[in-house]
Length: 184
Image 1 (cartoon, helix red, strand yellow):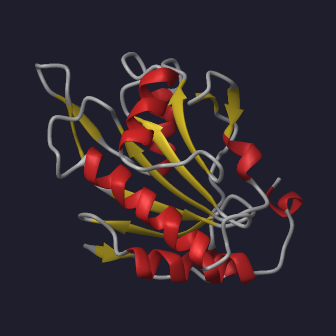
Image 2 (cartoon, one colour):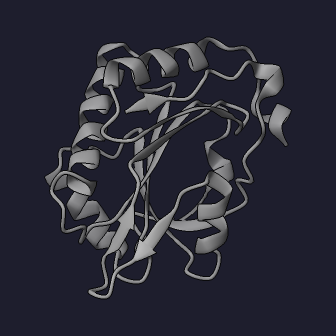
Image 3 (spheres, helix red, strand yellow):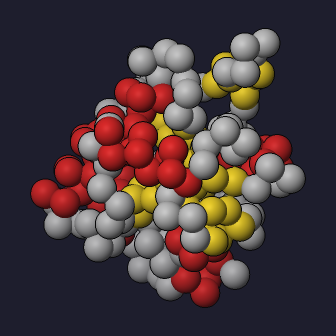
């Protein structure tokens, strides 16, 4: 497990956040709506066969959500989980999976990307998948830290991230000055 170098504000590259998805309640959701608050974002899918991958990642997000609340940052940051399986992962499946793993949907969202732009979205974040013959996917465990302007701050890769380190990142991002219009 490693965290990339922390990128100073003047060296951060903006993500393209113009992707429209469907949230866990079946409502349209645009990644651009996240601007204005720091974001911890990961990719998961509900039928992941390895209990040490997606289920563990979503449980870790639920624990991060509790840490964020204890730090009184729950109104200041967003936690985002995007499905790697937009054909299978309906909003109902995403919501049920998140709830089973302990996620509450106040500052967290689970998203189903549009199948037509899914590959572009993966490329935008540098997330990789490799389809298996049984309909499952090989993928990495990545957590992307996005600043309030929609720019890359750092990422945590190689396994389940350390929530203390991620909380530190979110606190640091939440203290940075700026507004949502800076990244548009």
